Length: 153
View 1: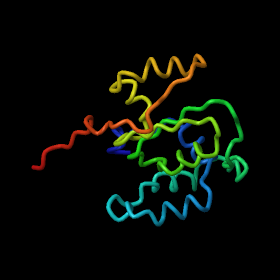
View 2 (view 1 turned 90 degrees about the vertical axis):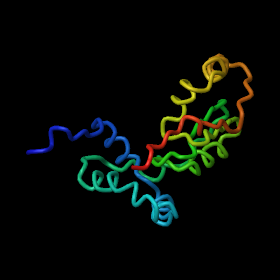
View 3 (view 1 turned 90 degrees about the horizontal axis):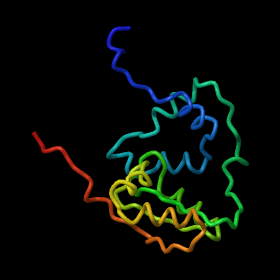
View 4 (view 1 turned 45 degrees about the horizontal axis):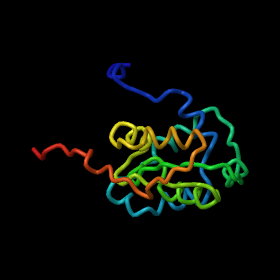
């Protein structure tokens, strides 16, 4: 297979988790009608193509329902996450009475990791949170300073 030596595919667990988790009909409809599609195209094309042939069993609608929990929960989500829309994080946080949502403006799917690298208070705040102490996280953290665009040629 000439030319496939440089082909880099995600770890098989990536497809196993994503295909089995699936997406609700409402989320699929939201994705199909998202205005960003006009600019970026179908960002789910890889997911949809792989899941048609990947050997996995859909976990079903009950898997995708909100969890009922009073455990303090920190949700960190990037506003520019093209894999999982910010609306998903807002829905999850709204369903958990003790959740704190930190929206990372300009953040991608790795927003939590990015905050560890670029937002100094994150490490100590998360350590305190995990130790059970009350921590006041900001509702948003701006990570747009880290965004770099290649100069036009």
